[in-house]
Image 1 (cartoon, one colour):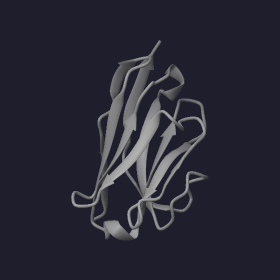
Image 2 (tube, one colour):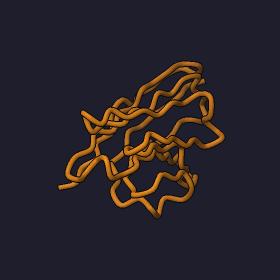
Image 3 (cartoon, rainbow, N blue to C red):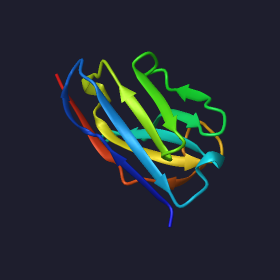
Length: 123
C-alpha cells in the first residue's frame, strides 16, 4: 500500500521556522520525485518545491526561494522541507506527493498524495 505521511506542521510566529517531513512507503522511492504543495482556504493549490530522488535536482516556487529548502534522505525514504523566515501568507495545509517527474507546476503529474499537515504563521 502506497503511503505518504506528512508531519511537522504547527503554529509559529512570523519569522520563525518549521521543518516538514514526508515519509514514503509502498513504492520505489528512488524512481520518483517528491513534491510539496500547499493550499490555503479559498485559494488554489500551489506547488512549493520538489526534489528528484534519483539525482537530487530541486525546484522551488518563486514565492519560497531563498526561504525554503527541500532535501531527501533516501535511506529513510523521507523528504524534508525546511521552512525559514515564515510569513503569514505561508499559512496553508501542506501536502507531499510523488510523481515520475519533478515539477511545481500544476499537480496532475503526481500519482500519490499524503493527507496534509497544517502550517499556521501568526503575525
